[in-house]
Image (cartoon, rainbow, N blue to C red):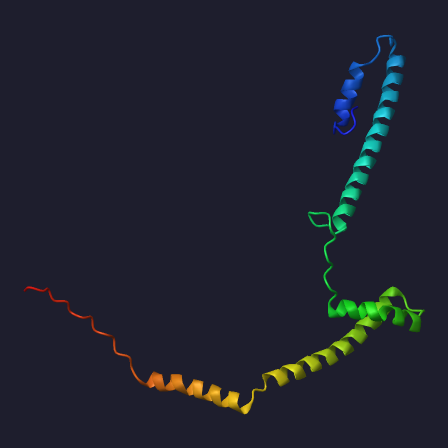
Length: 170
């Protein structure tokens, strides 16, 4: 069987049976030849399957390396706040509570994250409030802008009449 070609078991068996030597005269010899042939084919198929699996594994590794078209490494995305928190605090929790299982450790981290997240939300709200509080001048400008459209709403717009065109010379 040629390497790199994907032949089925049946096709490979037929090819080998055609190459059976003519010296085999008895049924016992033919059965023995067939038995050996089956073992060889199974072994070859297993080897081929393993080689293909390794090839796929290597291809996946190449893809996982995050290489761009030129072969250069792509920059990694920055960690979000949660991921950064877990990364920073996981070792500390492990040292403080060595008896905890991984599940319990992550439960503890999740509880701490929720507390930390609440402080983050409070800080963000304060920042938004600071940004959203406009100065007195801005408030006056907004009020004036809001009043202008109201004044225009009171007046009804009359449709413009089309101008009549007259022909010269008549």
